[in-house]
Image 1 (spheres, one colour):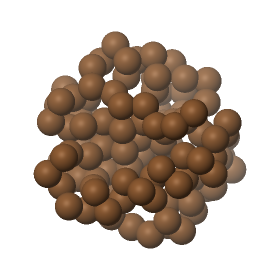
Image 2: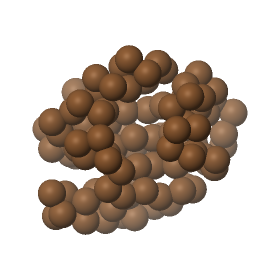
Image 3: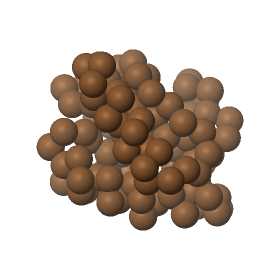
Length: 110
């Protein structure tokens, strides 16, 4: 399925808040070095969890309203939403294993 880019509140509502599937959200920006390091890892995870978890990227410069609503002050911020609620969150670049653990723990709770 790949990773959807979200830049407006309408697609946020449809693709994240109303999703029947848990959604892994990558809050990032073009100018952010750590965000660029995390991006290939997020793409690998999107392939591994295809069908179990949806993946979206939110450019905080384009979708500042969404980032503000969820108090995203540092990027990258990676969060898992389920039924419109944050069920897991991690701020800053981390290893693929760290993100996998976050996803697995979130899926166990569902």
